[in-house]
Length: 150
Ligand SMILES: O=c1ccn([C@H]2C[C@H](O)[C@@H](COP(=O)(O)OP(=O)(O)OP(=O)(O)O)O2)c(=O)[nH]1
Image 1 (cartoon, rainbow, N blue to C red):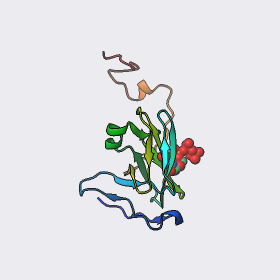
Image 2 (image 1 turned 30 degrees about the horizontal axis):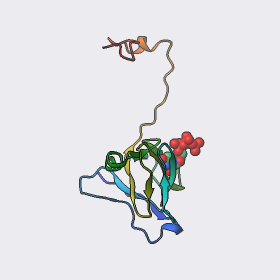
Image 3 (image 1 turned 90 degrees about the horizontal axis):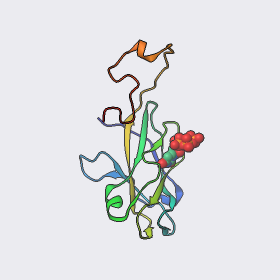
Image 4 (image 1 turned 90 degrees about the vertical axis):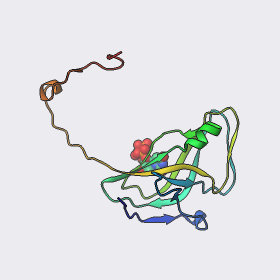
């Protein structure tokens, strides 16, 4: 299933290539760092990395900013708020909050692939207020949580 999404490049990224799927089966488009200067993320700290694009998602969809596993495995660098949520009514530049959980400083340069963007449909829930949810839909689990099946 494909979705056509308006995308605009910010002035500081007009020479960059748009995010793209790395392979025909990739779930996410790689997002690139639209930095004007290298940014070093020191261990235990995070940085807001611009991607140079703004999008206009149709109502009923979201985009998720997810980590790249290669970056995490090699450098301990991941997305701080993973998965970041891009709302359908957001029109600003997409940013990526990268956190360095590794032992070494990590430098991000312009054009580096820093995260991936996955598009997904969103279900809009409507509350149906009831006195007790177990009355509305009883289950074997009931209110057992947090390891209750251990
Ligand atoms: O990784 C992210 C997460 C969010 N956003 C943008 C798009 C999103 O639609 C907006 C708001 O994000 P979110 O709802 O997660 O932020 P909030 O902390 O709840 O703030 P707000 O009060 O702006 O909703 O910020 C990004 O660019 N990157």
